[in-house]
Image (cartoon, rainbow, N blue to C red):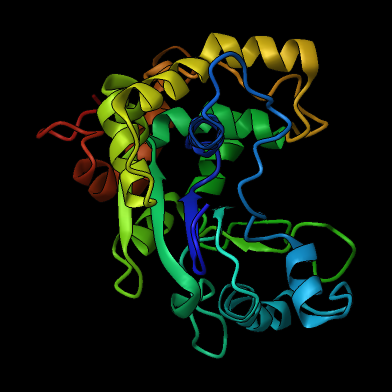
Length: 287
């Protein structure tokens, strides 16, 4: 684990965050046989109500999301700098500011962030399955600047509101952040050149280990292995509405699942950012 200061594992939902955490957990454990899907915790998720409640010392369920957003950077700062904890923390929030003007992810408490970006065309079917919505509704969510997870005014949801913005806005909010160091990791590179991609991300997190240890961690997180583990032992992070968490794990799956009009809508909504990360060719066509 890291020392004081937080490392964030950031992504738009269904972009490969869980896969990265499986590799990270296997690497940290030095696993050589099998991993436990239900023991991936490398730190609380950034949207954990328990995290904020524990630091502020009272139940935040009666507060509005905007009020909690004022507390979140202070809670992270206290946790990292006063309590002296670090860790690697998953987060789906966009890198935004609260209504006091402070970044939700407190720069003083943050060592850096690995931001995982994935072709939005491949996110659509995964997001639809994850949220139990249609493909068209998933396209709408990804183009909605007001999109958010756990977006209830008040209540006992263990997850706090997570403002997503559009897919493009989410990506740009993190990769163009100037307040903290950010390492960008493409999901497609996790597939295409896994040793290089994972090793570079782990090194950014301060984990400069042996090549063989990285390779072993990657092999233990193979998709077929993850499907088998979920099928035989369950996965507590799987939403109750989903038949299974690990769907296909492939790149280019959109070609067999999306209609032309859905592809055209995604490209229309997100072309500049898709072009930036190599998801469109020079003519603006999906690759």
